[in-house]
Length: 295
Image (cartoon, rainbow, N blue to C red; front, side, top):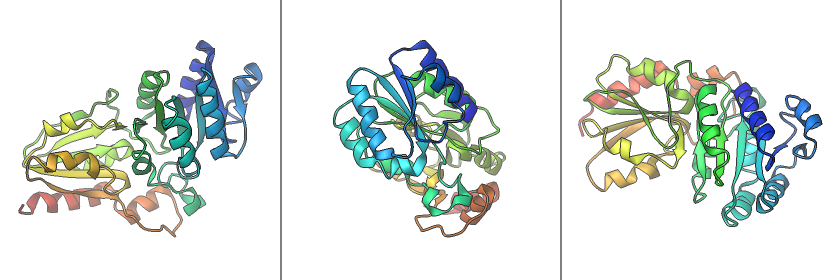
């Protein structure tokens, strides 16, 4: 996905003189040729995330379109106040691209984990949150959103889906129709969700835009009054988005996601998935139990 990101951002810099790329150390080597060719518009400011958010907002207020690239927890958690005051309150747009979603940097420990990024950023009114699961999906979403004048957050993942799905900004994709329940897969958990329910009589929806949330497609595709969420971030991140449906009809909701607990163990991304239950085997087990439960 990083190669796709570099290609998209490079094209933006080359073709639009009012754009600027700000690096927070990470990415400096990959963009070294652009720093030499466009020294006034491609900058590595170093590890100074909260300050860089303010600097980039100032550039946006002056008419530039900034794109900031950094590591997820240091952009989302360390700089949240600046995103709120310097971007949302000032009503300016810019792009934030992060790497290290959830526990992609699993060997670096808790300081580099950020399963709360989507839920945290959903508290900012008007933000766009894009959660592609493949490099192609990143390209589609970035090219649609990068120049639209809004605050846009692009959540990159290191372990992409192998399944390619044609996607559209702001719309869920309907991958499968069934009658016993509706499964919702987000971002990079799609492959596991497909493997879990391929032979089950369920509808499968796939979301790559987290905000704004496509409630309409979900409303039209709730089967048997059951919704099962597969969330590769904190479990329950999308409960707020589903709440309007609960006031209209009786719905049973269950799912899998990252537990809200301190993660003290290390290992690979696959180790963490097994430990926390984000595998196809566990999703299938939980889903079958849910479909058999009386509501």
